[in-house]
Image (cartoon, rainbow, N blue to C red):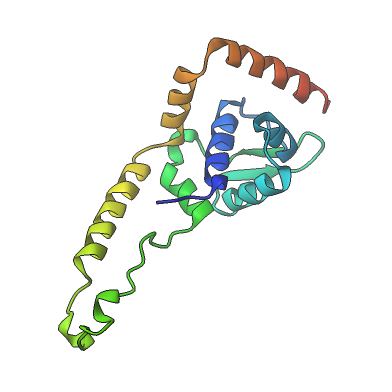
Length: 165
C-alpha cells in the first residue's frame, strides 16, 4: 500500500499540534518551517484535515491550526481517510475473465481469491489504524525523541511563537 507523502506530513503536524498548550495555534508557515516542508503543499494537507474535523483553523494575528479534538479521540484511520480518501486500495478488475480462456461472467459468482485476500488484509490494516490514536503516536514520539532535539524544539518554538506577539 502506498500513501502520499502528505499523509506522513499530516500525521507529524498533528503530533506536533498535540504537544502544544490548548491556547496555542500554529500557522502553516511555522509547521512547514519546523519540518522543512513546502508550505503550499502542507497547507493542502492541513485543509483536508480541517474538512475532516481533525484540526480547526483559528483566525487573527496569533491564528493558525489547532487540534479540533483531544488526541485520544483522533485515530490514524481518520487521518489516512482525510488525506488519502476512503476508497479501497486494491481494485479488482476481474482480469481472470479476460483472454483466450475467459468465460462468461456468470461463471464467477464471487470476487477472486486474490481480491478477497487483499481486502481481508486491508480490513485488518484499517482495524489497526482505527485502534491507534494520535495520543498513542504522541507517546511513541516523545519516547523516541532525543532530549537534545526536544530542547532545541522548545527553544525554536519560544523564539518563533514570540515573534507574532
